[in-house]
Image (cartoon, rainbow, N blue to C red; front, side, top):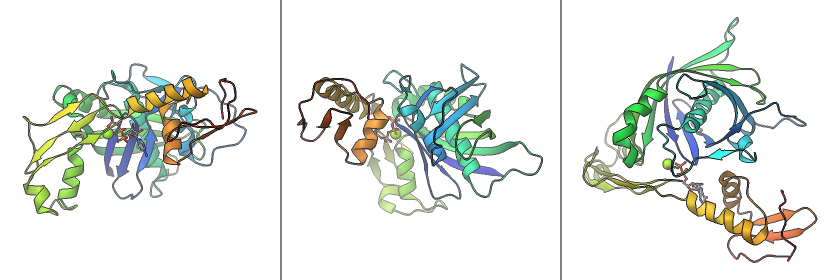
Length: 298
Ligand SMILES: Nc1ncnc2c1ncn2[C@@H]1O[C@H](COP(=O)(O)OP(=O)(O)OP(=O)(O)O)[C@@H](O)[C@H]1O
Ligand SMILES: [Mg+2]
């Protein structure tokens, strides 16, 4: 059975929705080199410990072990995407996307291994997007990189240990980031018009991402070539500035943007440092105690 999936391969996180499942899979776009880790207590969810071997003919290193998402977010050697990265050509973006597609297929309750079968196989038709600025030059290459057969093996991931998923992407339909959201708002599932103003109007969209901001203009559901633009800027540079400021002022360095964003989302602005008291960052930027600067982890 071929599954339909919508996947937003973001610079900050990969968001995936598979036909028939209401819950999106969200994985931070961060990877680090994988290794045999000491596990004292197993994580309570597979998403917290994506330890995978990814094989794909489209990757520079064809078969390599990676920690992906939350597991990589604390690692010293982790890599998040930077301004100079292009998600159409980035190996990192492909690694996180393939991990998400493999994860979603094995977590689907309807999908269990048949007796005698040792490898899960899944076929996808996927829809995804590229920023306005990269679309014209790279959508074909992006499609070629995604389409084909890839393989993901889960290593120390709880509940999925030792499972290999062969991910076969039959087709990849690439659209412009931001525009797909409008199509969704303007039409019903069966493609009938849901909102006439959106469907027949001339709509400007502003989609702020981590590294790019897109301004597609959509007229009667067609992308306007002349007025659609995009900028090579996003929220990540502000997060990086906060990470630098906190390090300069309080001597604490967030190991990744993902860790900072987790705290911002939870409204947790206090850093508790072992033996050194508490510091509050963000909002007021007032230190609670005047402890000496020193690197420490929490
Ligand atoms: N609650 C929040 N407060 C502040 N910033 C947030 C919050 N949630 C997400 N962000 C930041 O907003 C930015 C945009 O998130 P989004 O998921 O749209 O990016 P993306 O789609 O992965 O990136 P891009 O579109 O550049 O590929 C990211 O830098 C993210 O870290
Ligand atoms: Mg985005």
